[in-house]
Length: 274
Figure 1: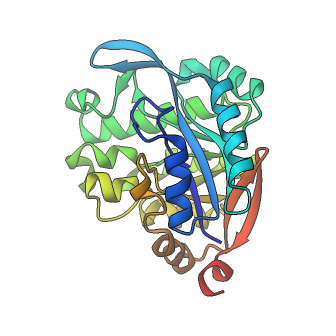
Figure 2: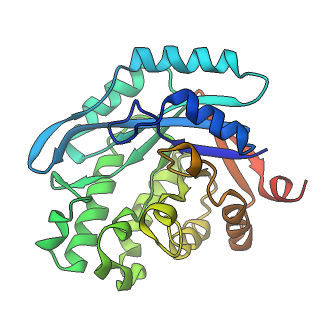
């Protein structure tokens, strides 16, 4: 069994990969469970222009259902979404998740104070401490409004974009992160291990860092998924086995897949050694 629960196709604004090419690429790499999590970001600021990053969800579901049938003997496909959250978007996000029968929803914070983290404007007007305090406040205040989701995406995403934050001690922010983690744990939600920073941004580790994973484990967090954040077929499944070993070393016993928004637990040791 080999899992990738974070991938993008040309349904996302930032991918040109046909969705069937992603399926074929996953099969070639031995992936047995692939979740498509194409982007929906409402009220998204890109270079000063605010718009909705969205796509035709009816077509998306129809396409994935067709691919499920076509490749059913080779791979299990799951219909998900990476939903960009912001504190003022709770009602819109909830409406979307209730309207469609997703298997899996990643709640990701891509913008803070309506500023896109990717273009770095957010960081340029803040000290490292201000940037992280506001980031984790925004994440918490966004997530507590959501009726349903599965995991938080790339929890320390900012490390991809702003070099000074790499030396900022994350333990200084454990008070805020503890609130976030406890909310997840109480509601059987979780976090992901995301490989995208490794192959796209030359990070020495994935998101989140080992410190964040160990802190989650210390609070009895169990729900955790693996995702490559691939936008092209060649990146599907990146560091799959390495991340299983990393989680095993920290003491996690399971990784999860999701079906109809319910977690299914799979033994890490079984995945690694059988």
